[in-house]
Image (cartoon, rainbow, N blue to C red; front, top):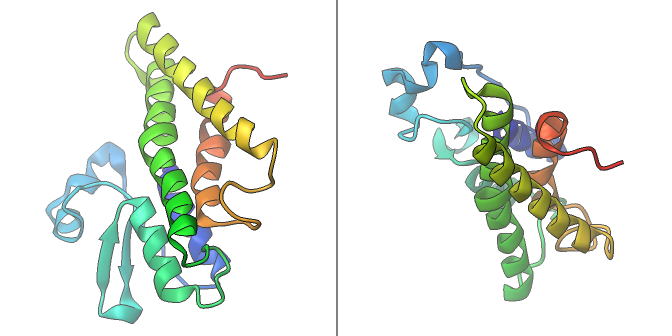
Length: 174
């Protein structure tokens, strides 16, 4: 549920009140007719903005972008409006969504949850996790934040994956 926690980080950072509704994945609640009526993808997170006519948006990066556009009037977690700043923000959000998230998820699956150990899957996704970590390390060794001189949703989008999955998917880096 790293993506759900990332959206919660943004809500908290912006000082917005929210209610979390937990789904029991072991019972398939995310695929129930009730949930699918709200979220056609049947996955989390789903954000329902009761302050905006119950506007619904799913996919963590879409939720984050919406929250910043709608509620971050002081530009606490966003970037400037120039095409360059917006492109860098998008670059990191897309890299997280298409790189870190899937690779960490697959590494965790093959290392911790697969019914049988498949060395190829473990090795392939472990290498991708290390590659993604290397990309981040190469940038953050030269600057404090990914795409701005302050914390943004780009930085937050990576945090929960490292906090929640690092013990199981990262090799010992000491």
